[in-house]
Image 1: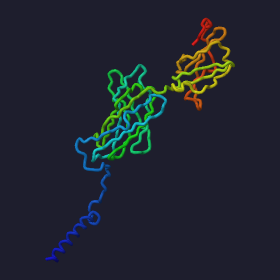
Image 2 (image 1 turned 120 degrees about the vertical axis):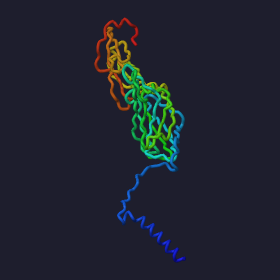
Image 3 (image 1 turned 90 degrees about the vertical axis):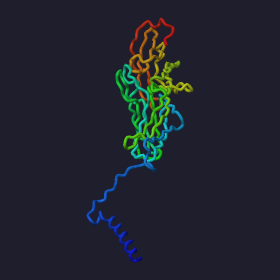
Image 4 (image 1 turned 135 degrees about the horizontal axis):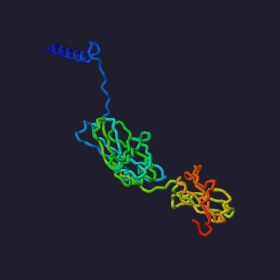
Length: 306
């Protein structure tokens, strides 16, 4: 009896080996590796299970100006069984309504780079559609990097906003993550506060001073009340030919501040501002141009020109 049981066990083991080798030795179908699908560890996600998005450090203040980039950080927790790759988008609730000149924000109102789980930062693009009367469009949004599924995904998004970003206000932006099937697997909000920042150079203004030798000096505004002026820069000599000088807004419609000067005969001359980038300066520098144009005479009737 024991001999019979031993022979049965041997036959069963042999049959198992034959079954395993059959595709290779007896003309069976060739073995094909199944596609690799990234899945968050654990059992399959329960129907309707949605993970969370949590912002780090509370609401983020984003200066709308020349300060440079700040970084938004948040972590998404995915439900077990999430299959990747995972895509994500950040949407603002703000609707951009067209003004007379088109979009209320500049073309590159926010410049961003994105990184996930400590990877290198890469550029990520904003879509800033604006609507006219009767139109319906999606709200402004930022497409985040598509990545492999994981239990948690830590996002870092830099934001460098210009002055037109002020119209975005103080939104609670919605973050939404989807799996490979397009199903939402995590969602939540992050708080952003777009606040006034340092204005661009052409909107900061400047102060001019003429010394006793007739040399004109320029003190460029910095936009910082604690140090309102940058170190002076020499414009040129010969300005003692004038009895009065005054800076003005852009009279030439070129977005550059201009300067007017009155001579001893009472004639008023216009020097249109010329913009150039000077190394070491606070951005673009605007100085009176080398040529002047006559505005008119009779300006010596005034005690003060400003």
